[in-house]
Length: 488
RNA sequence: GGCGUGUUCGUCUAGUGGUCUAGGACGCUGGCCUCUCACGCCGGUAACAUGGGUUCGAGUCCCAUACACGCUACCA
Image (cartoon, rainbow, N blue to C red; front, top):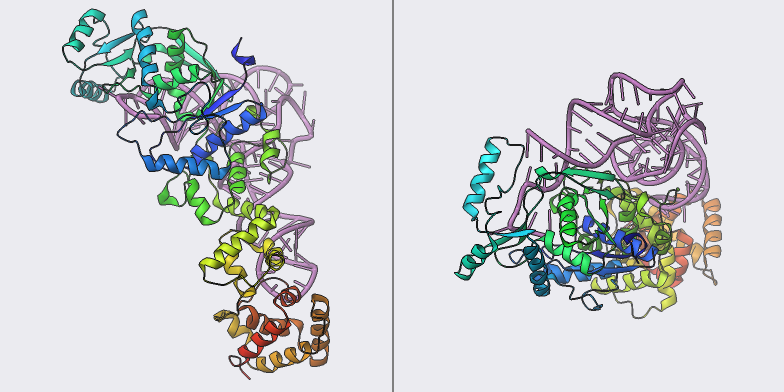
């Protein structure tokens, strides 16, 4: 069966060395979208072949962040399929078996060159500005017998691929077309390291084949080494997968995205109050577009519209302003129950007791706050005064609204509200309108003073709705208490 | 240094030889709505890196140049 009509199987293959940054997350998203769009399989493979950089905490964070984003893998750690194990460190026997094939065929060889020699070569090449770089193939023609004898005697060796010295190696990238490299510029890359672990190049090729990967979607920093991978597939007699190299995500001002320049990891954005949906949506649109004007999209909607051809080849900048806007959009579309939970939990942390309020009350608060929140983390503080009287009042608003004459205004508002037997938005508004006419004070003046008294803030939801929800008794009490702070 | 990849408003993008005096979104900005703050709505701002070709015609194809990024590890 040819690769093009094999079932789609793609993978996200991170290395557990640090936090999951947004670039990695986007790679995972595209793999996930593609798998879902093609009714294929999305699997997770952990590339933990670098024992020095391995980090257990990073691994746990990775699982957590992927799950938080909703990118549940069909196969991988925790849900093994038939081609496991899914940790490369547990596949050492497989690599040993496969490398033997290459050794037997004469396509790979042992190399005993030590670090020092290699460094000297590199240094000499740098100084002479030699066009050809890399290993000088010193051990290429050592006989297998001699080499194995030396190893038996205790010498350590790496195993390298015997790269053809002439010719051209090419492949077709889904979003960039044909890419060619001169073989003479490639060096004999290491396949098995001195510690017996495979290099990325070897492990990923062996695994992508054995795990029946149909498409490799990965960062474009791999373009330069893809010819080496093709050569490996050729040596094995395997058909390479289809390659699709994704552009990098840069920081807003250009350059690499890093913690120093602000949030860069999935965890950072979660802590900042972003919805996972927002991050998925935004990251997906960084380099991909559905082809029409849609921007705020749901997961399934994006999956339905997804195609590899619509991914842009150019590097993109991460614009947090737009992310913020998009989060506001998704919060507006979010489920009220979810938002209510965010508020209740946040209020708990602020030591504000919500136990005497029922679910409907909370949901009404959510309804009023929803269009005003840009971050989940905004919600609890925005909601606080619906549950407890304010103890602090915005200083700027005090100057503006509690100046001369404000106390009598507050009193007149209380008097106007007092007689209302049915305390709802409509009757409250009527009372304010009537008071405005009879007193000659503008509505803004009236509202400003008591809004601050009741909420502690200068802005917020419409006053009538807000008063209705907080209730007549609380409203009147709060105004009366605040009057002491107002000028006559 | 070599090799590779890329280049449309400040940013994300649409655009696959004529419909592009280049469309949408964020941002910024003017206004509307309005009890405030948001939301929403209406308008404005601003781009085909440069130079050569190919073609009747180029943002779209080709070649240079410039710039950016990547690779050039027994890291991924």
